[in-house]
Figure 1: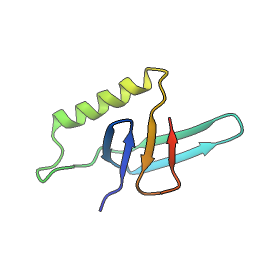
Figure 2: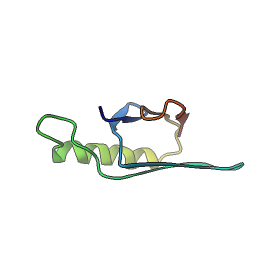
Figure 3: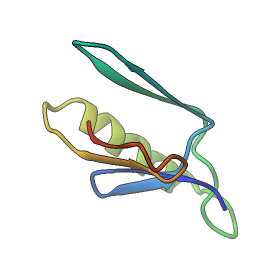
Figure 4: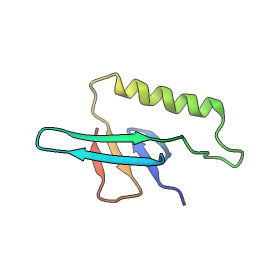
Length: 79
């Protein structure tokens, strides 16, 4: 079973790479990869655009969102 990332109310199959970089003053998560197919017929263009637009929209505002990653139970944060 594929791992998932949830940011706010948006859940999607995890990207190929999830990196964490933290220090005394900053903690950064870096997501990179390709949005994976979620249905029997694979990912359609509309779904990929929706996920992309939601992620870009979230990044453009100074709002904190809950973040979870099913691949590592120690990662549960606000981003």
